[in-house]
Amino acid sequence: MKKKIRNIAILSSALTTVGFLMDGDIKEPSMLMRFTEFFGMFIILFILIAPIYFFGQFLFKRMRADKVSS
Image (cartoon, rainbow, N blue to C red; front, side, top):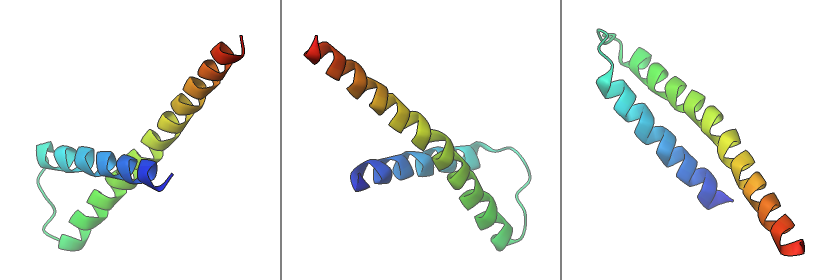
């Protein structure tokens, strides 16, 4: 479980970094605001990716178990 959460966090961090670098808006001069935006995007992506991943994994295991029992 720790490995899966870590992998989701790494994916979220990578997507956040790419999104932050590709953002064309003028950067805020405040370093605190930059960190707030970065971690806010990271948390939002993590919250969006984790349920999709775990629900997909649940469905995959369920379908696999149904095939084995048939």
